[in-house]
Every structure is written in C-alpha cells, then in structure tokens.
Length: 429
Image 1: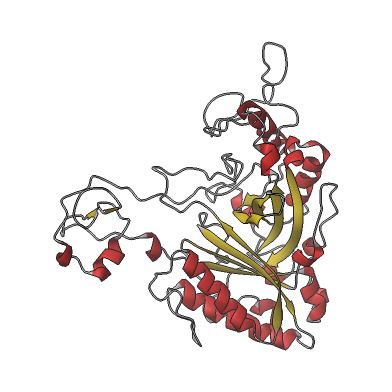
Image 2: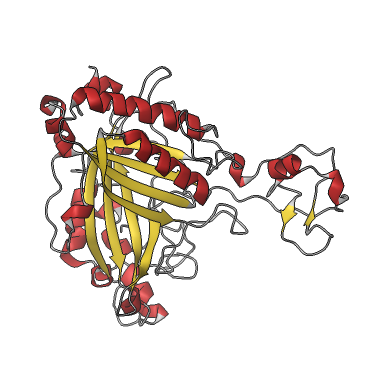
C-alpha cells in the first residue's frame, strides 16, 4: 500500500431535480434500462407510484452504469487507466504439461476474441452461460499479462524482459507461493458483479486444456455514482486512498507508467505496455480499529475525514514535511506512510495504483480475512515498486497493521490493434 495511489473514481451521475413521474405504463422496460441512474431519473427516491421520477420526454436520453463501455483495441490494454470498477477478479493460470508456444498463441487468440465481445456487451461466441444476458457492458475491462515462468514454458527466454526479473524478498513478506506468480495473469473489472463473473467464467472456459487456474482472487470497490460528488476511494481501513496517484494528464505520465514505443527500454513486443505488481495485502483490522482516530491519522499522515495532510489544507494540498508543532515535533511523523511514499522522497519513483478491496470471510477466531488486492502499474518495477517497497520495509508505521500474503509480477504488453490478439507480437514475432 503506497500513497501514490488509486485513480479518481468515475464522475457519479448527477441526480438533478426530479420531475413529475409519467404513468408507469408509459415507460417501457427497455427505456427504463437505457436511462436508469441518469440526470433527471432518480431511482429509489420517495414519491410516485413506481418509486422513480423520469425526465421529460424531450430530454436527451442519458446512460446508466450498465451502458459504460471500455474499448478493447487501443494503444494500451484496457484496465490500466480507467477509473476504479465496482467488482474485480484476478486470476493466474499455468500452462498445462505439453502446452507450449503454439498452444499459448491459440489461447491468447481465443481470450482476445472473447474479451472484445464481452467488453462490447455481446455474448461469448461459444456456449455463453447467459449470466450477463440482461446487462450492458458495465465498463468491463479484461487485461492480460505474462509471468516470468511463461517464457521458459514457451521457449521464449530470449524475449523475456529484464524488468520481469523476480521481485526481491522484503522483510515484511509472508508469501503463500501457491497464491503467487503464474505463467499468465488476467485482470477482470466491471461495474456489475454478474458482468464480471460472466467474464471470469468465459475466460476460464476458454483456457480449455491449454492452461489451468493457479490462483484466483475477488475484489470490490465503491460503485461509481454511490457518492454525491466525485471523490477518491476509501480502503477498508476507512482512509481516503489514492490522493497522489499519477494522472493521465500529467506531462510525465506515459514515461512513468508505460514502456516507450522506441528506445532501449525493453523488447519491441512490450512497446506501450506496462508492468503490473500484484500483492494480496491483508489488513489487520481488529488491531487497526483499536487505535484512536488521531493515532490512525499519525500512521498514515493524513486526516481520516477528508484525506488532507496533517500539515493542513485540503486533500490535494501539498504536504509540508518540515512543519512542526508547539513541542517541535513534525506534524507529519517521520514514519508516516504518506511521508515515506512521496515521489520527491524516493528519487521520483512513482506507480499508478489501481487496487480492489477484498473480504474472504471470517476465520475461526473471528478475525476478518480482508484487505487490499494491491495492483500497481509502472514502466519499470525496478524503478517504481521496488525502491518504494524497500523504503516502506525499513520503517513504515503502517507495516504493523498489514501483512503481504501473496505476490506476482507480470509483463502486460501494449494494446492489440484491430485484427490482432494480445501478445501476438511476442508469440508470432
């Protein structure tokens, strides 16, 4: 968990002022689905026999959460720069015995075709389960990556990037190898749980005899539109989490997050790609929740209510690391998480965090197995995640309340052009 954090959530729908509801029989089900959640249509408000108020018929129809759509083809793969999604699945696969480069190429071709269809709100081409039949695309994204072991399995060792070398050991790691790494990695995100599950099931079925699931994790975020205004997400500790995330509009965003299309930064097949570090970070919530709000704020270095730095201002105010209190103590403690992770305290190291929270039940002692499915993106993990985590390992106040339980590093190639599948330049180059 680092403070250069998650992207801003999508702009929530503007509820607007409700207008007089039409007669229920005057609104078709199709029209309702097409405008639900839009400006001028407020679901769940009191008043009106149908429990909603509709915009005048002359208003331009607006969209619901379900009609949001991300594009499969593009310079970069989807699922990296889009806003946070309400539901996510992370799944790693290992190629089966006897499966090599030809089988891997056929698998990525199938996966890419399925991803393109599902992201457009269409059913899978073969044996679709019908789970998402009534839903739109719901901003579905499906992202594919390759693990370190993939290249030996496919005879492509010479094409393995140096940036994909295994992550170093960190003193705070308590990693479960069975839930770490993998030949192939797939990230699925959507604003509807059934749409996300439908994609997960389709991807698993497409694997056929070429690959088997190594591990799978489920996550969630706040649903877009659930807050009255756009705001940075909160994690399960209740902290606003993502204030200093790099933004696509930043002048150095592409350089920090994506592999350049030319130069010596990596093999040509990784042009416009990125590297994803995936960590399952358990939050020790029972211990955390025993702290006072002030103690929690000192651990993070920011106010819990609004995410503002303890040195003052609003959420986006620059943190004053030199400010002291009446006793001469730093207002932002020296071991505060937000202080340690600032790019200007780490030689400019920056990562794009795009995580999901998770909750996998309550154990026999009544302790929640909950926390963060940490996913961060960078052009080079050796200059992004690794130096940040090394510094956190040496003295982050938050370390006492979290546990890193699984880890993976994956090379995520650039987006597929029309007529291509993801990874084609690697597998057929």
